[in-house]
Length: 466
Image (cartoon, rainbow, N blue to C red; front, side, top):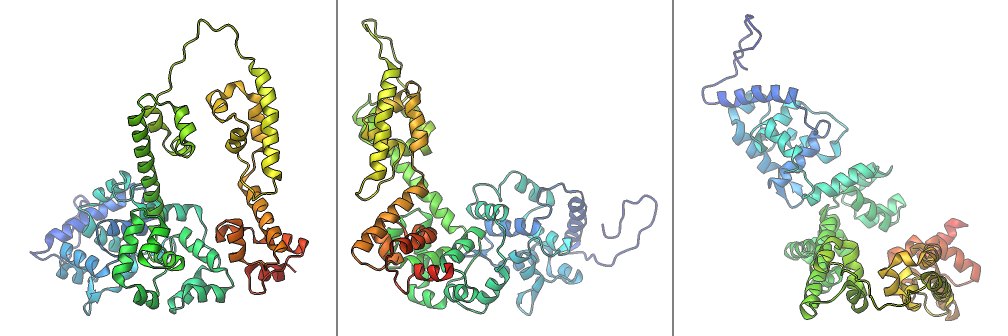
């Protein structure tokens, strides 16, 4: 502490820093310096990231970015301009936030460069009452907890994703004002792959001036609000008259917005499903789970997968009582053997049908064999059927390949050139899914001799393959 030292009888050097009006700030700095030295916080090594998230959570933001002007004023208000000037850490320089404030919490420096601990202490003083409060907030997830969509997104990205080798070139080109399409072209990376990587890494790609001018700041803010509320993206595009590309750029402008939309959308679906079940129970108080499965299989599957505990509380399993007049029990082994063959035949029919392919799932085969409700009611009686389901259920990847093969054959018969847009319409699959199987489509198209559009993605893929 200035002017004093807990070193026993030794007389420390006197420091000419304290003034009558700012002695409290210097005492706080001295005490919290000791607390920081002895801290066992889990933020060690990530204090830059934690403080950035804390500042955003406490409202020191402008959209998804830090508001350095507000943060600098908070530091100056907490410690006073004379003390900061004496310590060589003024929060403002020529009316603008000082360089140390603008650089201290810069995301690109996470884990790459160290900064003086004293500067972190000044920011902590502006956000918290003490180091202890900062540690408690981190330990109890008050600021950085699972409830923070931005933190969960960035934390997941930082723990599970490694930055690609083109990261530095990407930000360098982006800093020159180039659009993401031009950056992708210069780096030789597909646009969809670059946008997917940026979303998974939690990078922010600012909106271009053209898009800002075209949509306007008010409409962009309303679009972001609709996405946070979980509105279906097609409805958002229809409501505001924007394209799918513009919507994706708006998501990239605010990291975490995509995850926030996904969480809100799932919450809306859960709310809708619960409302539908309540209406069903109200209309039929003695409805059973089997009745729900028979009348609304989609609702049943969604509740069973995403809201199982709540679903079982609303409709408990009914107790079964033995029938005293029952004379002969069913021969479950015979039924299992007979129906297993029927289910296997249903799988063969679904997979080898000449009509537009459908996914050969367990439920589809059981429903076609008339065993859907009976099988799920007592799975233990049908071990052979279970084995058939395990062996013959079609994977998602195999189904997509089968659907794409059918679509390519159909386009070959109609002499329609292969392209992403044409193929996704015929196959009824998203364009991103079709791109993911571009190698398969190109090879299959070459094998059957189908025409590939000269400007399509598959034509470029074929040249690269050759």
